[in-house]
Length: 90
Image 1 (cartoon, rainbow, N blue to C red):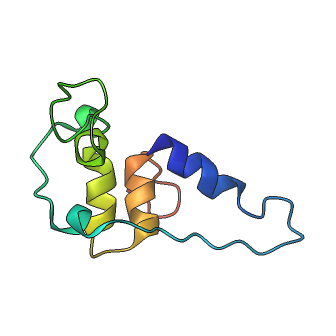
Image 2 (cartoon, rainbow, N blue to C red):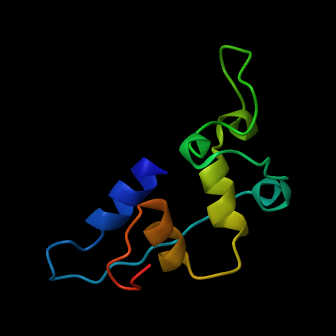
Image 3 (cartoon, one colour):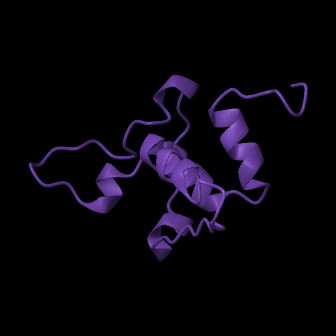
């Protein structure tokens, strides 16, 4: 998630170009059940990694699945993820 936010922030940073954020994901990510975890564990993988080369499903974080499956505003998701309450007065 942190790398995603970094890349998103670098799109068209200089102001001379327009940027587009496109999130592509595999179908399993939309259907995967998200286990309940504490807020501080959202970056943890959704499955216990038990082998040297884990699959995408094993490496994917809870937060990434939340992002893929959300039905609300993506900006709101990022604001909550980053504890940013500057625009909404949360």
